[in-house]
Length: 337
Image 1 (cartoon, rainbow, N blue to C red):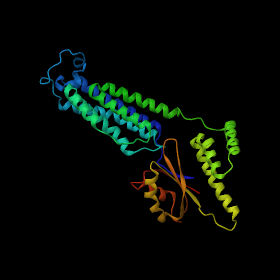
Image 2: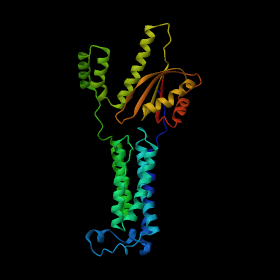
Image 3: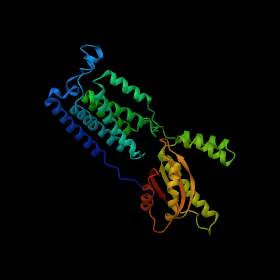
C-alpha cells in the first residue's frame, strides 16, 4: 500500500515552538504593562467594575473614547494567543485532515472580536446596538467536526479576554492547548475495538439471519463493520481486495484481472470530488471503474476505484494531480496493488 501524505512533524518540535512563543510574547506583554503610560486607556488601567455596579458611571458624552494604541495591543494580544491554538489544531488533525478556511478563521475571529470589544466597552448603548446587529445576522457555514465549533468558541473567548484582561487570554490558550494535546495523545473516548468472542458471536448472528447477498452485506455492516476500529477496517478492506482478485483469477485462469490497483480517495465532499477528479482519470489510467464509497466516523468519505494505471504513472503522480484540483477537497490518496 502506498499513501501520499505529508511527513508528520515530531511532537516535541511543535511543543518547543509553542512554549517559546508563549514565553516570548508573555514577556513582551509584561514589559508593555509595566512601562506603558496610564493615558493608554481602559485596556491597561480601567475595568468594567464601575459599569457593572453603577458606581461613578460617567455620561455618554464624557466616557473615555477608545484610543488607537490600546486597540492595537488588544488585537495583537488576541493574535499572539490564538496562533498557538492553530498550531496544535493543525498538528492533531494531520491524520483526519482539516479545512484551510477554518484554520484561518481561528486567527481572524479573535482579532476582530478584540478590536470590537475595545470599542464597545466604552459605551453601554453601543454594546447593545452591536448585539442587535449580530442577532440579525445569519451564518450558513457548516462545520464538518463538532470540535471545530468548540475551537470557534475558544478563540472567541480569547478575543474577548485579550481586550479586557490579556493574561486571561494566555490562560485560556495554554489550558485549551494542554487539554487538546491530552485528548489527542490518549485517544480519549474512542469506541472499543470489536474483536475476540464478541466479534465471533456477532458474525454468527449475521450469518444465521442472512439468506441473500444484499441482506448479508447489510447485516455484516450493521452487526460487525460498524464496531470495527479504523485500523481493523483498513486491514479488512485490503484483505477483501486481494481475495477478490484471487477469486477472479481462479474463475478465469487465462483471463487477466480486470483491475490491477485499488484507488482510494479521502474527501469531505464526495460529489464534488467525483466531478473534479474523474475527468482527469483518462490521463492517469488505462481502465477505471467507480466501486463505491464509505464514510468514516469523523465524516470523511472514502471513494474507491478499480484502476489500471498508465505505465508511467506512479502514486506520486496520481496524488499530485488529484490534490492540485481546487474543488476536489482531497484529503488523502492511496493506490494499492
